Length: 426
Image (cartoon, rainbow, N blue to C red; front, side):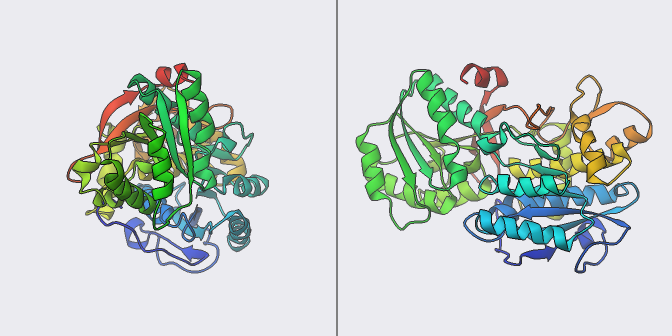
């Protein structure tokens, strides 16, 4: 997380990760859980180029949610047990590991996680297996993905890209360069970004597709600088960013403002990248990221933050961890609403948990369960605020421009990018 840097990279394909002391699930073991537990699998990357995502952005949110749920009595009288499956290094690994997960956990009640690079092949398997799944994967491939069982509880990359274009154009930046990692998840931000930016008068003057974690990028950066952009649109991992920012400091004293995608709005990215340029305050002089807002002052976020501090007292969370917490809470409330932990039954109640904004908002799991038992209408207003699923099971894109605080203790919003602004730049 934020203050601890990179977490240890786990390599096992299947790791039981019950939240024993944290969530009161009892001791762990191998294979499927007994009838007294509800099993949700954390299907996240633990090896390969995206290995940091699982431990840093996914698992902590799931863990905190399980702690909150089990402290409130579990799900329909059963304790929630989290198990963990490594997505692997590429789509082929993801297919193999997902199938092995289903074979190992025959009574699986749900899945959370997935990444943009592998989500479609994985989602197709889970759809066929009738396993309810909530993901944050931002890929354009999910924008019109017709599914009964797969939901995306995070604004998509397509609207993140449009919001970035809007921010740049409103600043008067009419010439842009793209420094984007060559992995498919990062590359998916380019089509909507380029479309929105050029449609509204901008010009893409250079597009560098960057192999990750190289020792130098001087050739690419020299070409980019020669194109004389007003702004750089950016997405890579933090190690690549550290190299690039260090070389840009030498080449042009970091004189071109950089706008990063939501993937750069994490503690580990800012921590590693800022160290290469002299610290957080120095990085904040040239870099902002455009990210989904998390209600840092809202009751839903405060409930999450308090529970998070009990488990990770020395860490600061980020929007991805918070949204992953929401994913498990929403899934658990849907089970309560349906009075069933069978994915083929409760999947129809997932949108009912969040969609009816005319009802009474609840900001924590216990209040949601109480409302269900009392027969009262409600909607879950969690860390991301009020959300609604569209016909493709995605939520709308509302964004903020943010930077790390100078001491690295968290993030602060410097500009809102509301839905109507995003819509105007589509």
